[in-house]
Length: 340
Image (cartoon, rainbow, N blue to C red; front, side, top):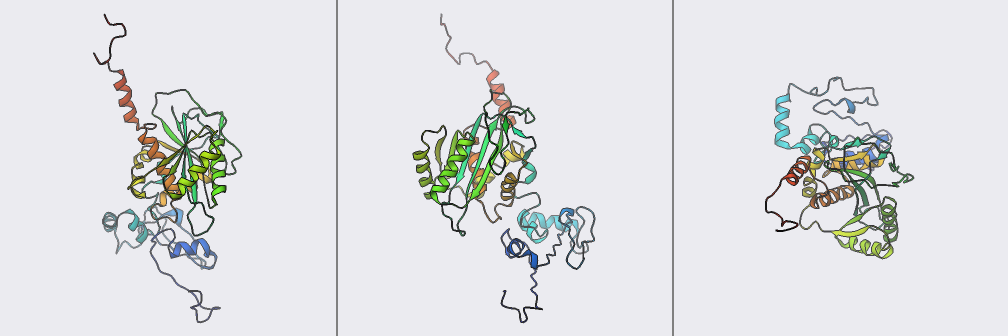
């Protein structure tokens, strides 16, 4: 395209497009060449937070949330039918001109419970989840890690011993153990990063993250790169307190894996601190499966599935049922301590 203008000084490009994904043509231009373009976006239903003024001073005349763009042709009833027929992602791209449904796709943004305090609650168990790609080439995927803590008790419990990590890693947990609580456990995303790096740098960064965050178990996806990283970590960090486990997703695809933990988000079990690095994770998960990258998303589903499958987290109703069951006396279920 750059060489197709008859006159590079006075010519112009015009692109008319629905949104297909985060890295479609419009997404590429907005990320790399936005300064040279005027972006005109007219969603079918008005979204005030996306309103803007163009370079010629034009602004969307609508003022009310949800106000229709062209009600004579697309009424609210017709848009509702299209939303059902197309599904949330196609409707978002064609009608709302965004690469993801408002609020997110499989995992909606509002399902994350933001932790706005300056310190974490004390943790019962800390799990790290790693997705590996140990080359520095820009065309390759990122290596990505998320670290999660399971904590009991109310989310508003006073937290005054464990500092929330900043992006530079300057603040780190110093005491993250807590006595047992009968309340349903919850999960906090303690730290996250992604980067492109070679094997030795990746192993070093993973080891440093696990030791500084006092990780109990490191999960690594069971694939070619994961084997090499796991072997090196076991060799170099064998004296550290965290274990290393390869995780095999078997034949389940990425979308199915994320759907399998959707209910945990919907019920408010998953927490995240109000930090730039956690926004990076929340945004990528919200855009999946239409986003440009999915490395962090893979670590999220891998970690939460492990916690769920091993009984470390449970829905509130399941925990209540478990506690009620423990209260029941079962005659003859156990032998007497002193038989007569």
